[in-house]
Image 1 (cartoon, rainbow, N blue to C red):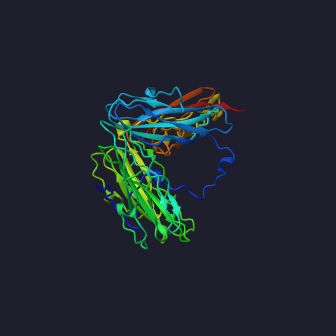
Image 2: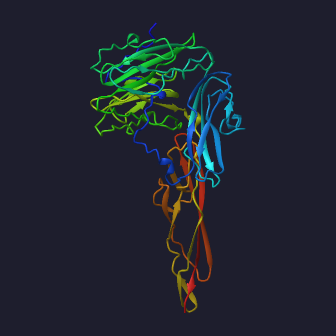
Image 3: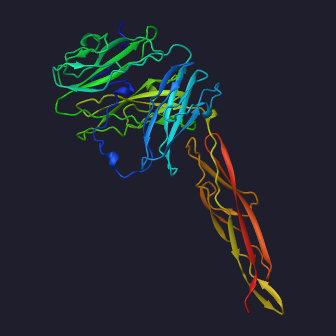
Length: 458
């Protein structure tokens, strides 16, 4: 039975797996010798799909400036609604190879951050683990993207394909798309030994050929994995970059903007773009029609249910199509949201000594004048989710004038009030700051103290 139901047009390919991502040839191999800019996570486990009851094994590596002390901190960012797991259930006896055993079916998102002895932090990396109730589908891996000359035999390697339960695999290879110049026909007939782990093909003209591999554990077939063969024609194919996979904040907009601007052409030719939806969570009714415009570099995609969505991007330089690139985003609902932390800044003190005059030993004093202070709530944060925050400053006394009530930083003006000679007066006001994300809020307050004493200078 032919498992490859998707045929991809020569210039526009509609699906791929992460194993086919093309490395950026412009990346400087000596980047590691640049001045150190803090801890960096260099490798982290790929997203996984496992059966319930399986022990999930993760791995991470990273570098710090002085190659000295480094600490990996793992966090359970989200889990299925029925799960009772949290960060304490991650076994970090070896923090570079932690494990955990999921307790219910669903999607788990974990994060890891690297810190050095000085407490400087790396960027946060995420791993998504999808747990199924029964036998998990196997995972196809068709090996790296390849290059060849016309009429040169190309050998493929599917040996990195795997089954989560360790079952023996069956292989099904097929040619998915060919250049317009090729006489080869998409399908299993243009590849030799297509039911083996190491099949081969012979390209007959210059351009980009794409092959697909699916594997079976005897019960389920995997999704197709796609690999490209670039046959030399004097023009290097462009490189598609769909961005980095990540678990997104529960406050992420339902119309989410994708980003393919990292794509490029080695010769600098202008690119055309094509996005498609590879997979969506169970219960989702999304499709390619959910993109605002599949041909944009940064279309929006409107998701409908929480879970993981996988997208495919291919670009074309007018001559060659790129190898496909994929990206997976995991959307969570607001029940998984973490509240922000409000920080209204430090208390403020104003001091004034208005002038007094005297006649017949009766003193008349100027008022304690209106004055102003700057309040700064910009240290407020949403440290776990990183959501954009809204701000609101309020004064319960209604005596103060707040210049920008909805800004993180604002000026606040006090009222004037009468002063008395040689009498120290103190007025205080409490200003409340409320910060909110899409679902939760937090408050903090700052006190303004005004000290005023009338003075007389003979």
